[in-house]
Amino acid sequence: MPGSPRSRTGRPPVQRAVARPPAAGPGDGNPLRNPVVRMRRAWDRPLTAYYLLLGASLLITVLGLVMVYSASQITALQMSLPGSYFFRKQLLAAAIGAGLLLAAARMPVKLHRALAYPILAGAVFLMALVQVPGIGVAVNGNQNWIALGGSFQIQPSEIGKLALVLWGADLIARKQDKRLLTQWKHMLVPLVPVAFLLLGLIMMGGDMGTAIILTAILFGLLWLAGAPTRLFMGVLAFAAVIGALLIRSSPNRLDRFACVGSTDAEKCWQAVHGIYALASGGLFGSGLGASVEKWGQLPEAHTDFIFAVTGEELGLAGTLSVLVLFAALGYAGIRVAGRTEDLFVRYAAGGVTTWITAQAVINIGAVLGLLPIAGVPLPLFSYGGSALLPTMFAVGLLIAFARDEPAARAALAMRQPRFGRKRTGGLTSGRGSDRASGRGPRRWNTM
Image (cartoon, rainbow, N blue to C red):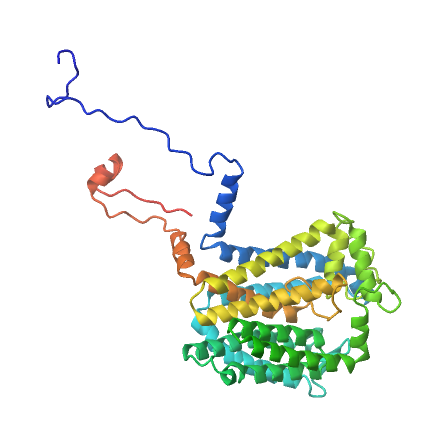
């Protein structure tokens, strides 16, 4: 047709379709849906558990150092010690624990399994050594410590928690591979007898709180192994009967149970003043370092009842922050245990998560007056190097397991910087300067 545009080849020009905007998705019209979708995608990323474990444990430890420094000053001065005495010891333990965490996070899973039996043997030996006169040291009526010289002591029962998790996970994983867990005797033996051996050594020193945590780890392993309900309830009933007998045999333990929900300040001094500290904190607290209860009114302010001082100085906002961090740590541990195909990783991650969450619930429940005072520290938060070091190593285990997932390994490999590597393409694939010099373009991989 005259006057119509034609191409250089003499053919009519191709009519290109006009680009249309993409159709609106089901949630594009709702402005509140996009953040929800983004949050779900963020939770589903392969490195979510890794970052939650690393970030939550780091924040809990740092905040714990701050609160240990604040809560322990008066106690140190009353003992004619420098005000930063307990803080410096906790800082040293945190530094050593950070090294253990990094070492555990870098260890392969096979090495963790290989360490299970030596750690168990060492824990049993040290826990038996506590009962030897002249070696074991009694603290607050419980003989569960070994003096290392000077002011340094070690509590072997804390190592027993880590030993039971690693050894129990390795044992159950081996039996699961051989399809032996369908029989009750293989489900119980030798896991339950070894756990009762550890419990017996702990109870010889009178430490009921640590025995409760060890029992929780045992039940967590049995639950993850798929123990039948009758078997699970039978072991639970047996442990409840033994616990009731031990409680009735000790007036001190009976008094602790009687103080649950009590307002009698004469008989339940520690429990009532813990509630006073929380109640006086309000929404944002009285300010860091401004606690009143730590001036001799609240016993064990920097150890078992550090959560009460946190509530008094940082208020409801501070205590809720601690709870959120522990919830994030527990969620990440459950996610690692649920997404792995490795049986040892599943049982070990579940055991560590049960250990940390159960101990946190027992400690915080005692401070709130909902549970009897068991004398267990708040994990990663309270003062005490013997409890901090095994717990940080256990967190390193979870981080190693989170890194070992195939998707997480691929994501971490993509994030490794490889600066200065040359592309192997030809001369025509680069820019003008690269063509002139006869080199391919240089690609800089960033984070």
